[in-house]
Image 1 (cartoon, rainbow, N blue to C red):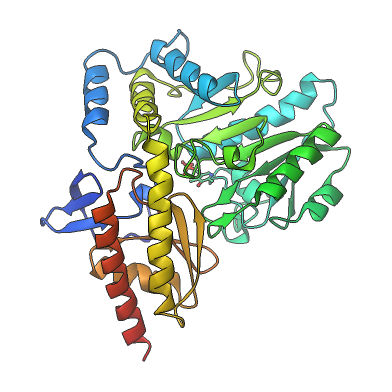
Image 2: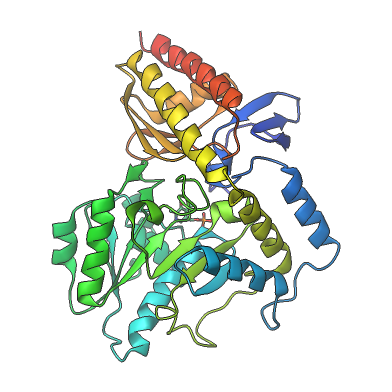
Length: 388
Ligand SMILES: *Cc1c(COP(=O)(O)O)cnc(C)c1O
């Protein structure tokens, strides 16, 4: 269908940060399939985990216990705030599950009138009917009838406006600690702490969408760790499957109280194949020194970008981001730089607010970063030349 404005590029295989077309052209992939391929392409450990599971068992449904699902849930519980995990297949589904869990939480507590959720300008939570209503982007809502009710949107970073939006009907506050699609907007630690305090004072659940910022991309396993808070509910997806479709909703025992048998479900969610790969992704990301290397590479990239952007004052306005979720705020259309980079065989991803994203695989090497920066400079030269 015509849902995507695709580039005419067909990749046949991948090797780490490289994507290779059917014609044998090599592209340096700093998009990672939109923050998905955290270990790059065809990582031997993920290939081995997939092959091993593929020869045993793919799918049984959630009518039965799934051993790999239990193992992955135990790992997520052991390393995060969560006590409970629900598995699904995508970010939108994880956010949808979070919305349902937040509403059912108050229903189970005898306050069914509390079902509204405060969200933020520039948010992106997926493309289902409820998640486009939560995101509030008019371009994504147009033509789909009356938006799903129950979302109250306030400016990102505005604690006073958030507090004012709380009513007796409010169930939760839902936020991406780093807005990805919205233009790499990083919520300050103070703001995240303020939201936590507002939730505690008003009996609300704090719902985080770490679909993009999670699984090491922030330089921590999850971005919330940097704010020194914990949420009640958290949606994850993208990186957790390393390229295999997998999502999850993480919850405290208390926040999960509404989702009793029959209230929610998924046929594919957490199947043996997906969860075997998810566990191997976590094995790699949680290896000694891995996250530290992400933080070091983040600094390397940001310093390189700062130096480069000084040479293009009419094009690059700002370097921002967290970990390896990096944004270049431009004064030219982001599509121009994405196209120029593609000419240099460098893959970048656009975002709202005139931003281009750099989302490299987390295991990118320093040499590959240096190569990417050279290609980016040449791409900026192209953009500059086209404007004079
Ligand atoms: C990508 C994304 C989603 C939606 O994930 P899908 O897998 O495309 O449904 C939701 N929230 C955030 C923050 C995302 O980046």
